[in-house]
Length: 368
Image (cartoon, rainbow, N blue to C red):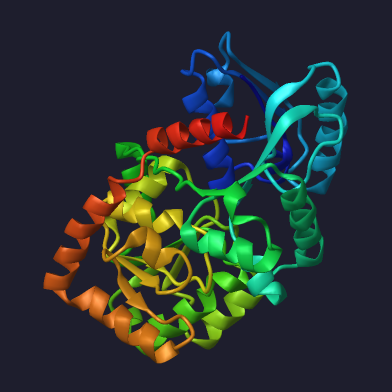
């Protein structure tokens, strides 16, 4: 079986959940004896060690370059990738990494992954919703099969795009255990002054970071705890202004870009990890926190209860009073916190990339 993965997500991001997903799929397939994998990264700056996956049955085409993630890098890679694809012959499976199909890739079967319907449900929070939604519609109409990363995600797909249920399959992503490192722990301690509540990743409007700032102030927790914000770039002027309005500037410690080692140490040492998003297709950070032994406070919407089950403390992200009350409870109730940690460890252990890879490869075979 010949499988082709394209450049799309790696042109638009150097790190992130979708990039991790495709890295782990390709890594799994390197051990499949009857599979030939073609991955075109093109010009990229991905943090994942794809080149180490090169083997007799896995070809990774990657170039260096100084282009930052974004449209320019995407266009350059689209031209390069199509030029090369025309000489590769017919693939058995073409699995695009995002929502467009490269015109010169020939394949017997197209398998897409549906990640979420957040732009559809919350279009005002996405600058590119008017571009993404038509691209999805075209892809899903042409795809022979569609992987959904949660049952919640699948329900949204059927609701918004009207695809045939028979060509969909729910396959949960796995969980990568984050490394621990003494040097990273020491670096983190230098940044901290006391115990902290942790927030990780993008702060797009649907992530409800503003709601977290308000709840943190309303509860008075800022008097004894700090808020550590990892990844997602530097605070925007609007976020900084809200922090100033809430008198939280001294309480927010922001590290715009972090290594996996630092992230692992931050989860392990946090008083609480908070995941306040209005909508998610899966939700990997809560599982990472659970795996590190950190209690989790999460919104009770979309896929989060499906994925995290009974392990987190939950709240309604549309109800600020619910948020503040749950935040206080999750920080202060030691017995409940201990139960959350124990339950979270069991839940996190059930998500493996081996299981994800096995199910995905089996689905490829069914499609053929």
